[in-house]
Amino acid sequence: MITVQYPEERNPLPENYRNFPILIYDTVDAAAGLRCVACKICEKECPPQCIYIIKSDDKKPDYMGKPQFYPKVFDIDISVCMSCQICVEVCPFEAIKMDKDFELSKRERFDALLLRKEELSKSNEYYHKIHPVEAAAVDANLAEAAAAAEAKKKAAAAAAAAKPTPVTPNPTTPSAPGPTSVPGATPPESSSSSTKS
Ligand code: SF4
Ligand code: SF4
Image 1 (cartoon, rainbow, N blue to C red):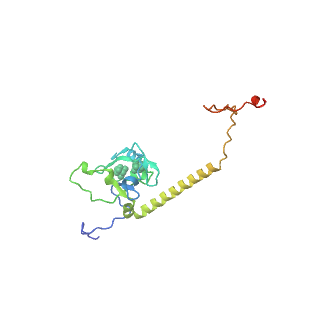
Image 2 (cartoon, helix red, strand yellow):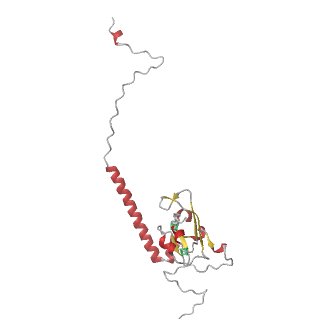
Image 3 (cartoon, rainbow, N blue to C red):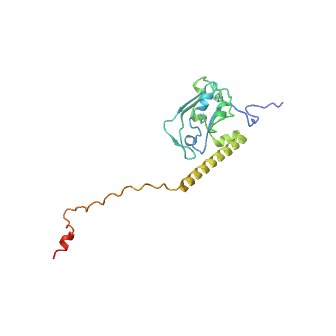
């Protein structure tokens, strides 16, 4: 057993250490790059019901340019959270992960322990720092899913281009309209007048 002079000295935390959830964003813009699409699955599945989400009314492009809903509000009450990680397991978008930060004690018991979207948002770079092996595996999965989606899109476009153009039925030919009468114009000579001497 080794005595560590905490907080001056700290033992490194293992890869799979976890504390409370965080929301991951891509790029450098937390608002634009948030992976969460406010599907609310984590909110429904959280055993102590400590996640509170309000979904946006509009959609905005995610970091890949695809229009998505986003959480207008995303709060987690960490005074209730039991660090079970169920929210992480059920999220289909790799949007919520477990943080390793444990120095979160506050003087107040209520509002100070209610973490808002802005406090929960952490970059993918940060995620790589705290869980390097897991984050690399997630990146590989996301890249594979993006490549599969792109291939599907290209295949659909190619199939649409190869499809024969449907033959449109011939509409009944309308009778030719008569000569348009232009005010002031000389009417064409009739065939009977041209034969007159
Ligand atoms: S870790 Fe468990 S208790 Fe905490 S927010 Fe996620 S699902 Fe809820
Ligand atoms: S964190 Fe995941 S499961 Fe929860 S609302 Fe966002 S996308 Fe859905």
